[in-house]
Structure formats: C-alpha cells, structure tokens
Length: 67
Image (cartoon, rainbow, N blue to C red; front, side, top):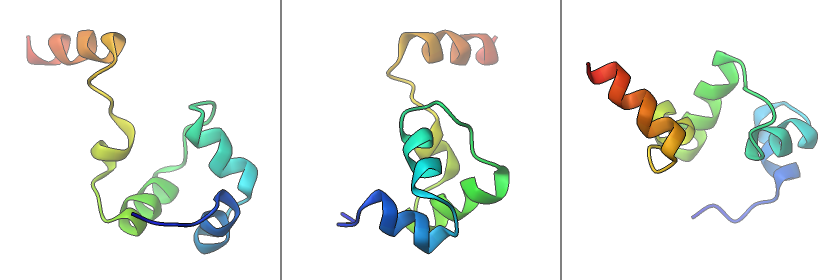
C-alpha cells in the first residue's frame, strides 16, 4: 500500500508524528479537517478509516442505529 513512516505521513498532512501515533492507537480523535485529509491521502472514505464493525462494542452501536 503506502510505504511510509508515521513521520512521513505527519509531514505530508501538516501534523506531528505524535498526532499520527495517537490516532493510530485510538488515543486521539482527529479534527474533521484532518480526518478528511487522511481519507483523501489513503483514497478511502472516513468511515473506512474510523469505523471498525468487527469490534463487538461497535457492532452493538450499529445495531442501535438500525433500530
């Protein structure tokens, strides 16, 4: 896919490596602007980046939304 470091990605998006690291570890939710930049960079939707239906806690949330 993309062969780059967190530092490379951070530089391309105009943020720090620590920000990229925190997002990757789900310790930080990016701003909407940064979320769109990430989605554009990886050529995916925001949902593909941030919604993980395979996790049981998120599956329950999708069940609620469908009700």
